[in-house]
Amino acid sequence: MTEISHSLSEQDCLVLVMIAVSASDENMRTVELIKIESQVNTLPIFAEYDDARIKQMATIVFELFSEEDGLDALFGLIRDNLSERLFETAYALACDVAAADGTLREAELRLLEEIRYELNLDRLHAAAIERGARARHMRA
Image (cartoon, rainbow, N blue to C red; front, side):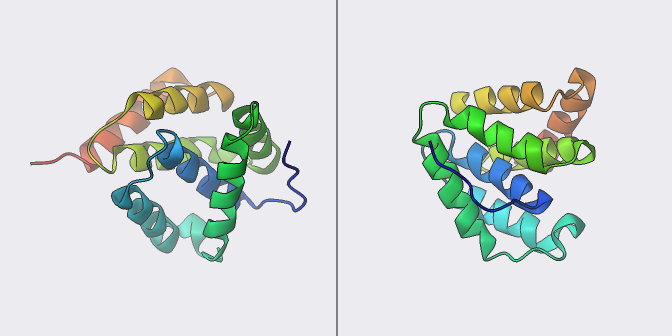
């Protein structure tokens, strides 16, 4: 199993979640990558974040996804390094990445469900976050 020898910042954890959703269907689409970059470049939570770390976070996700219990390890890292006050933020960012290409695939939906469960998000709050993502990414 991959050992993460360095500590992760809360921002790293948010990036891990976004990359995991994009990679969940084994096809990281350009629009999803642009969404991740845009979120990192514009949201206040990332104001002090070194965006060069995105590549490191992608490597962590890919290594974990190649392991049998990698998803469990990913959620362990996130729970250990992300404060509970940012769990809804993580889910909102995940929903935005999943919705970025206008299509929610089965693997993305399963991972979003797993994120809701692992972060113990209230179902009503999660539904509101999902609705907001859908509204922001609606196409004409």
